Length: 51
Image 1 (cartoon, rainbow, N blue to C red):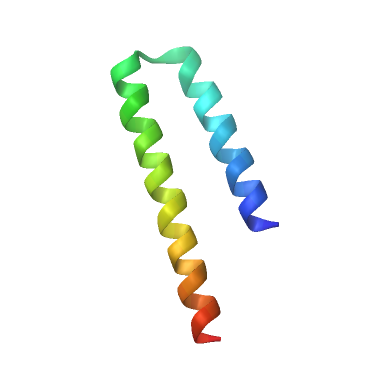
Image 2 (tube, one colour; image 1 turned 90 degrees about the horizontal axis):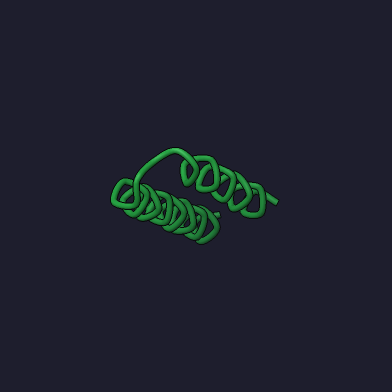
């Protein structure tokens, strides 16, 4: 559930930013969002492994 809502939020953020900024900024923003998603997945895996 958390993962689905995270992806939806990320997609909505990307859509909103896509309308208002230039391509170079968008590229860095997309990379930052991907990194955030990966970090959250890693944390979830660590938490599950420790439980």
